[in-house]
Amino acid sequence: MSKPNTIIMAREALLPALGLVSKAVERRTTIPVLANVMLAVDAKAGTLTITGSDMDCELRASLACQAGKDETFTLPASILHDAVRKMPEGAEIALLAEKDFATLTAGRSRFKIQVLPSTDFPTMSEGTFSHSFDLDAGLFERMLDTVSFAISSEETRYYLNGIYWHAGENYLNAVATDGHRLAKFTATLPEGAAGMPGIIIPRRTVGLIRQLLGDKGVVKVSLSDTKIRVETGKAALLSKLIDGSFPDYVRVIPTGNQNHFTVEREALASAVDRVTTVSSERGSAVKFAFEAGGNLVLTTNNPDAGSANDEVTIEHGEGSSVEIGFNGRYCLDLLNASESKRLVFSLGDPASPTLIQPETADETGLKPLFVLMPMRV
Image 1: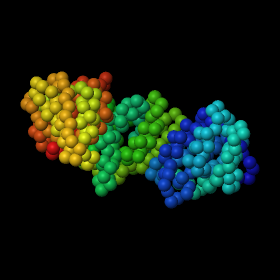
Image 2: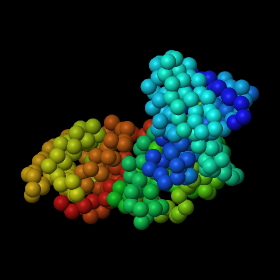
Image 3: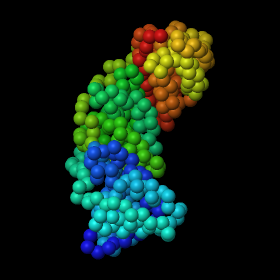
Image 4: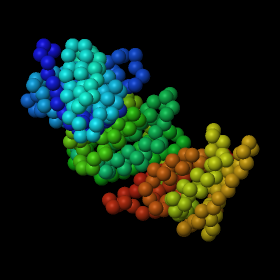
């Protein structure tokens, strides 16, 4: 950095960009530069691009700035974000980076922050994307929120540690399962997505994509069999994918369950939440007694704490009464992920998986579906 180059930008533009990009930074790392964000100035375009990376995900955000020349350097993400956050609202921020330190000023506030060279900062190669398509941000958000609760955290089955995204003949499907529960969201296949490879988006990447979808509108998705890129107007995420084969989940979705019971979702969620108050942390076992022509009775027993029971009205029932055990916490996660006012529980015998779907389809005519495995009570 031969000559001083002061970069001028608005706090209200810099702070959200830093807040977003910092989420990709690994806080506990043995590589010092990975705790930093990279700042790259394009003087001609009048933009500052901030990049955070953990070597598996790379998140970038751009904002307007004034600068005399192009330059690139890195600063500690946490310190920089906190310094900017504590500056007065509406402040104009000046950043001057020199060889070992950068000076950040706004009004009477002044910070001197250590610089690390950008040559040490890892940048990901995008490679070639085989498919690109536009996706409504609101739909993308619903898709991720509906299925992400079922992502497995078991490291030995790493191929379940994400959302399986794949195209059907006319649909784009998102599926997650941990072996105890499964969630699937189906949307109309976007133009350009036909023939896309089936990919597994890692849990961490799913969380970062959710951060990008705060603004409504359209996002551009590009993917190959090893990477995914999601772009909004001012930010972009590039991430590696899980290298593995997702199991044939269709086999675990029950198709012949003869007993169907419709219940109000919020009422059931409240009742499950109440009865699990006394359940053990390890099991959270709850007995669900579906009474044909009656109510759904929930019961839990914990030898160390006591017992609890509650009832929910069955709005509509077909078939025979069924008593079955579920993990209460798993069931509550599922209920909270569903948007439907009423859910239909389709049950077989007490040892068989239960299919759960909204009573009515969404505006596109499609329904998400959930599968819950039984447990002994």
